[in-house]
Length: 110
Image 1 (cartoon, rainbow, N blue to C red):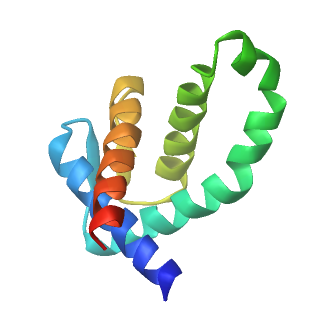
Image 2 (image 1 turned 135 degrees about the vertical axis):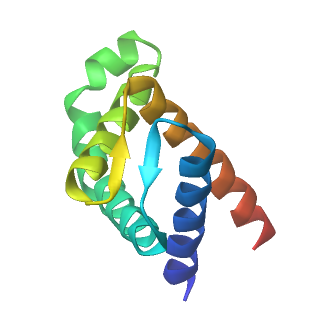
C-alpha cells in the first residue's frame, strides 16, 4: 500500500509542477500516473548507473553534477511517456526541483 500511495503522491506533484511551469506539459491524469511510474523506475535503475559512471565529475563539482543527472532523467521520462513534454533544460531542472519539494510536503502530510 505504501508504494501505491508514493506513486500517487509523485503523480500529483508532477501534475502540479506541470501546471506551474509553462515549459512542461502533461496531457491528463493518466499521463501523470504514467510519468510517476516511469520516473520511479528510472530513478531506481538508471540513476544509480549514471551516478556511478559520473562519480569523478560529481566529486569535482561538489555534487552539482547530480542536477544534470536529474535533467537527463526528466528528459528520458519525456522521451518514453507520450503526452509528457519538456521544453528546455531550465524547465526540466525546475520541474525536478518542484516535484521534489511537493513530494516532500505531501509525504510529510500523509
